[in-house]
Length: 544
Image (cartoon, rainbow, N blue to C red; front, side, top):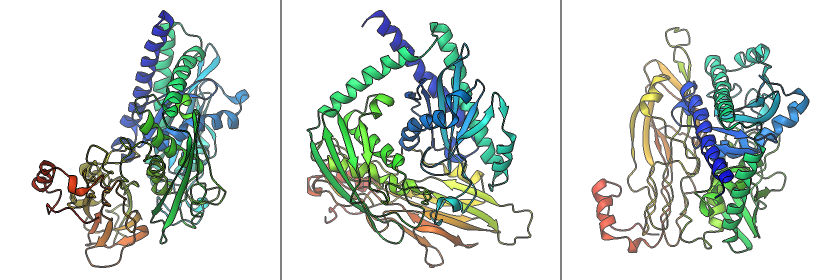
């Protein structure tokens, strides 16, 4: 390694520290529990052309990989001639941001010696953006909330008070939503200051040479890993619940030289409800899945993302177009990772796991007093992320109650109960929910909750794998289906806004992951431990 290469390697390590501090600023200052507790965010640094140089480890693939595309939209829409020092840009455009209105992306240019040398960007999920709220019930994006086109949050250091006023008057929790926008801007400002300190220390006037060093090495390593997969065409299909009617997801992967292209022809049409997925989000989870299978230790940046491309016919659910409703794009979008991994499972038998629960079992609660005149019980918006089990791996059991592919953390009971009138009565692993196999699927969990005295819930359900469980692989059994029920015996659908009356409890049984391999080949030691820990209630393998 030359002295220049060594110097660039040191600077690369510093960049990672910079973006991690950038992300932690957002975690520490955010108002939304989804950011503070679950890490539902992204943060990164971009070169002068808007190409992502480095991302924070803290964050989700859906946020990171869509943010990687978003900065170019900011540059093009604002226009290079209107980009000034002290500017901050903002949007929640689903097609230029992260796929739905509840994610706000903020971009900040970095100037050195009066020249723009790069950008910082970050994304966070806000608890409310107005409209129908976080749920699948809208019929188009205009019903889903406030749509912020790419515009200036701050112009040469001056806050856009008109935009702040518009946001404040169009959301249910203005303090939290506006506060999160300020947190996003502060996050980028932290990154900017640390980068300038680094450039001063290393006497850098620009980032082009450092970017070239990062991209050249990442590109070569990524291409080498893709080359380990035989050229050819690989296909897979998956059936998931959808909204009232099951939908088919289909992919054709074409591996050619150093590139992988995914085409989603054969996928079901767009829905009339808000579970549609903009193509940029489909691409984010396709790319993530294949990168973790082929090159899990490589950095995620412009050069590692570049070889992966997607296409889809107009009108399919993985290629939503404005004004399709997209609020719950994650419910279907998270399945894209298992869909694409399934296509190459036979080529990578020692790598690709069985299918998992996939979609998060998030719930959004609008808590309201039973007596609307009771001023002592203010309204509240509560959001909690929860996960089922992951699929069993070729040599290990699946992970229980773990988010894959999103990677977000589950919010703690204590943090959730602090933000509104909710009681979590029970939160425990669900026995027998992991698919049988030589390696068992990860367990789902049971969550029981209710409003506190004097309150009722308008509960937005956004659950999947209630009708179509995660499939096992290589002889492994399916994971358990999910289930939702009210304590009063009343019906409760897996999707849509519904009432949880005062004095009633809601129980969620989250789905398990599929098993891997013949259940009869599971070791006696593993079976004994399953029984001892309460993961299963019988030593006999579940019939496949």
